[in-house]
Length: 277
Image 1 (cartoon, rainbow, N blue to C red):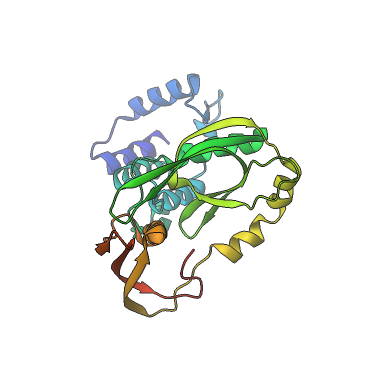
Image 2: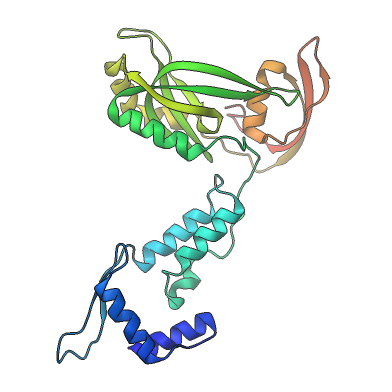
């Protein structure tokens, strides 16, 4: 009823509107329904009043979305808080205790200049349209500088989310019958992603897409053994990018020998059989 709605608004906002105000707002909403919602006014003699007969998302779905947003490392803390607050407005008070209160998000620093979701959207369009991609692939060096390699054309196979990161499996465009090996590109390394020409090796792409689930679990997943150790690692310059990928862009190398192209880093980690990915 309008009285109940006024009470709920008052409990949330600190000020309870009048019942007439609620009824006026409901009439306006039924005449100009917001996106994804349909409000049905009461017919003559119907005592049930206004009813919401269709909504964009249910309260249970909104609670799920809040939990997902709160654990997304590719959104900033402010973006997570803002989106979660908006979604919480769709969750009834009696269901808000089903939403996870606080989540620690593993925010090992990644490149702040790359839009992961823009890269994912472009890759998805290319997969759907059977097109290849061109992009710049960024790698951070041991001394902190970033190199960018121009990739002129690779055929996308599938988008993958594994161990907290987005990947794109690709096949370098060598043409039909090519023996090129598939690549697993981290989306937070891909800059200026653009749709290029048509896929050159569609039969091989279709073959790879059928095995992507098995390949992902074999090559990417990583598990700790439960014991955190302090390791002092000697790293070759060409492998520094893998250390940054695994442990964050804020990892610091010490005692860098430019002549031998090696450096050292101290880490607190749990070991696993698949230590390097």
